[in-house]
Each structure stands twice: as structure tokens, then as C-alpha cells.
Length: 187
Image (cartoon, rainbow, N blue to C red):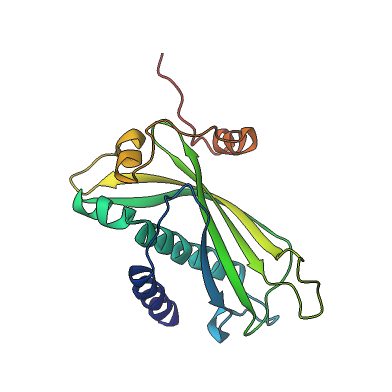
């Protein structure tokens, strides 16, 4: 239930604090570790990261105006693959930011990067970079409520970005091929 409340709070805040920008920009969603995010070892549970990544993506879609555009077309996104790397722990009440960015797409799949960042400690220098706690790649498709996958150039148009994807990093394409997600031309 707490995650639904958190989603509603983020959604309402996102509606008040829209762009400018596109999903290709970095979108920052500030959050805090809550008691129901913890596991038995009292750090954020690995499953909580994936759930909170959903909230970061919703925040980006609403703040860019893309959510309204896809809703009007009766489309919705579905995650078809995720991979996350944990680098540090987050504990109860820790503040962090989820940084979400669309990195590119092929004919069917959109690839996103999401990072969990914690602000530098109080004793750090003013120029210290945030600490990366976890980093993830996400693959998603858009489905029409009438059925079928929506072509990525059509979704890019709804996102108000060029229909041609920026170059997707080779490592992301190799990951997508390993998961059998990347588009393969038909013979």
C-alpha cells in the first residue's frame, strides 16, 4: 500500500513540475527508504529497487508530457527485461534519487538507463559527485489497448523526439541480444 501512496505522491508532484525536456534527458526522482522497503538485514530489498524504478519511469513520462500523449493513443508500456547492478546499500530513511533516461530504441524495444544516487556525505567537498548505489538497464515495449506492439518510431513521435534513435551503446545491444530482445531483421 505504501508504494501506491508513494506513486500517487510522485505522480501529483510530476503533474505540477513538468519539463521542459524529453525522455532523452535525465529525469531525477527524489525518494527516501521507507520501513516497508527493508529486508531482514535492514537495507533496501532488491525487489524494492525494481518497484521504485517503475515510479521513476512514471515520473519521467508524466513530467515530459509523454504519458498524456501515449494515453490519448491508448498505448501503455510493458517492461520486457531488466538488469540491475547493486554497488552499495541503502538503509532506513536514506535519501536517494532515481535518475531515469531513455538511451535509444530499435523497431520494437525502448532501452532506458536508471541509476540510484545518494548525495555525498556531509563532510564531502562541495564538488563531490553523488554516490551511485545501483544502476540498471530496462527494456520496454509499448502495447496498444486494441492489441499488438506499437512501432518505436510512432512512440518516438508521441515522445516529441526524432523517430531515429540515438546510437544505443554496444553493451546494451549485447545485453538485449542475450535476452533475445533486440530486433532481428526477418529473412
